[in-house]
Image (tube, rainbow, N blue to C red; front, side, top):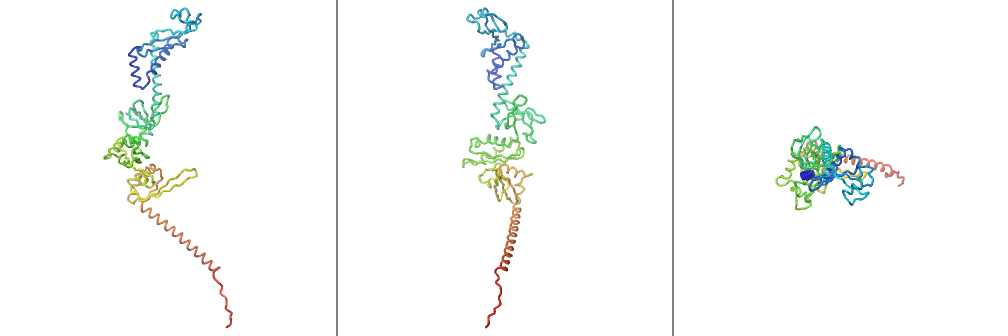
Length: 398
């Protein structure tokens, strides 16, 4: 052990983010374990320990023995006479550390020590990963694709290797070796005795975090992201509001000539992004969420269930030529709008709406007509039975 060891330990500690003292203690424990494994006599004494000089790297191995007047076990005891030859102030019952030559470890002991050191390093590394990334859940991480198989993509995110599962991958997105991408940290779980960092490319919060990173007004709290709806790889809608009336939330997110939103689309493989202005009026918010379609009318209805939960339903009317646009391809536009707003949205074209009104009018008119006929019949019966005075013959004589 020398200064080269000290330099190696300091470098390793810096690269792995591990406390130097943890490594020194690991090496000391490994040397003791290797020494006991190599020499059966040392197994009989539990008081073997090693010390490494933190400055010079010099190491010594000690065997602690008890000072006794009569030695019963020479492996764990030393006579008072021998002890006083080493230190004249020692008395019976004291303990003394006897130096053991390090060279006695031998080749097998050195291999065992190396294995034990690696185990300690792995353990310290696992603890560091668990602690560091548990505090970074739902944050962005820049990563480089390392390798992949049929189920997983493995990503270097700097101080750990992360796993991208199939469920968190984006359909048709390519993951090529050495490709740089950004990921959302989902969770840290223990698997086969080691912590595994799981990341996502499909989670809606990835869009949220990319906007927070790209738009300073969001990062400093002037513009707030209210909600995000996403179908990864295809389209996302994001609702924003401004806490400063002088700041346009849409302009802040889109950027000059669309530069900010374009940077996010580039990161997401040209996934389309609609930036929507949030409004406290549900009808206005729903209208905005259905853009680029134009909305003519929104009727909202809130039903409170027995369990206290609320059922939010909205009926939306759009021009006939905008109906397909409002629905979107395979219903995507209305589906994302519903997720974004939290309302169930039923879209009707203007002609469909007019037809519904006409049918309701005819239905109401028919009911009213039936009621009039019923009332008329009742009036006739009343008149026939009660109100018609009987005709009597006038028998007066002139």
